[in-house]
Image 1 (cartoon, one colour):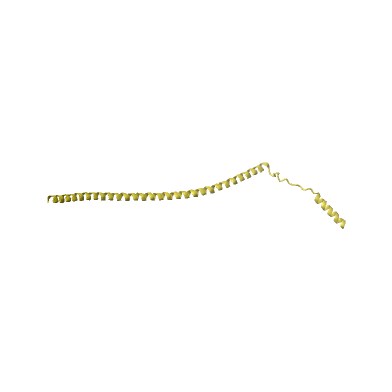
Image 2: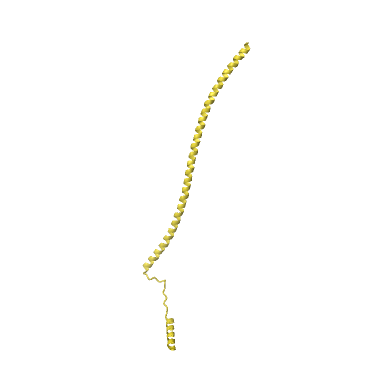
Length: 137
């Protein structure tokens, strides 16, 4: 029995180690050349389009940020324009008030000049009459 086991052991060992292992070459294309070439071209196009897509998405993000900043600038400028219009309107109102006050003051000044002229004439006549009375008496 020992001999049979020994023979079986050696026969199995020699047959298993004596087999040649076939290596598969993975660089060979099992497809026709035209199909393999088209697959490679399609893969290259896919890589390039995904790269372009990433760049385009980044560009869209940057453009959206730029648009947001420009909207903020536009709203700030609109507020400045409204404030400027309010300032101009208030300045015009101020000038109208000043013009009205100037007109009133001018008319008051004319009235005072007339009054002063009349008072000077009347006081001159009174002084002249009193002087005449004093001199003649």
